[in-house]
Length: 395
Image 1: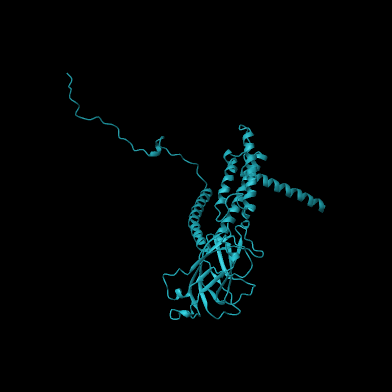
Image 2 (image 1 turned 30 degrees about the horizontal axis):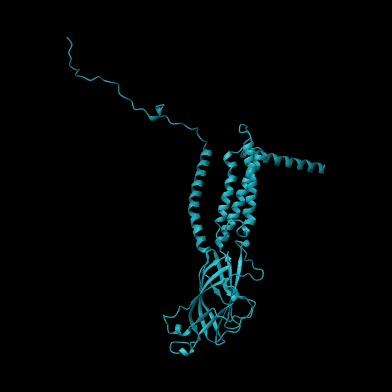
């Protein structure tokens, strides 16, 4: 009679042996072919140079860019007065000149003029009898006022501003602020280039003539301070050379030039456009005319580049907008226009060859080994031919 009770002892099993993970064929790692010691050292050096170059590039480029931006940006307008052969002795008014804006499209410059005081003047709060009004005259032909009055070359007779010296002396807060604004027209005398065609190397010159008269007596005008920045331009004011200026009068020339950053950006943009154009032309010649195989994605790059170049050109600071609206600038003549023409021709030829070619045809791929072989063969042929000619001449 069998018993239904479970056995009192558990069955024994053989002990499990711990196996290394690589003994399991499912977990066995892929063993690569061992590298030679020289190749391993070269590979490690290559990785070190790559890491060092990346770190140096990431660290140096921002620092250089920040330093260039801080040192090459446009500065405030400053005035360099020339020594007067006959210094003016008499009452003088001190004026502050602030450059507000400069529009190269309209060829105008906006300046603010503010009276800040007087020198060698009898005018004071205790002596108001010496505070006569001062009339400020400008060359009317240099003002961009848009009026329809007949222009002439006579001496100005209508003042642009009348300064109440008595109100300024007693600090009358009810009186109007002693400041006025002028919109001056930019001229380019002699052989100076001011047209937009010379972007970014245009250099305009503006002539300012100021005369202050009270009871037909000349009152000197002296520039106390100049300030203001025209975005994208650098300006410098100095006394007009080569002319005789009556004592007490101002004849100032303001040179307007593109900022150094603007010039650098334009030059780099033109160089980049030409490099991209030449590379794409070489790709087109290699694939279309010499039949070397190239990926289809590369062949459509000229089409996309046509649109990218116009966007790059439009991002140039101060560049005229669009084609045909304004006269093309110099960067268009030497960079954008010829590159667009070459890229258009390259895109048309490349697309035509890409569409009309047989996609099943296998062409030869251009590789570095093939290039090196071709160069070595050409050099050997050249040297062999010249050596044969040289030996035949000697013998």
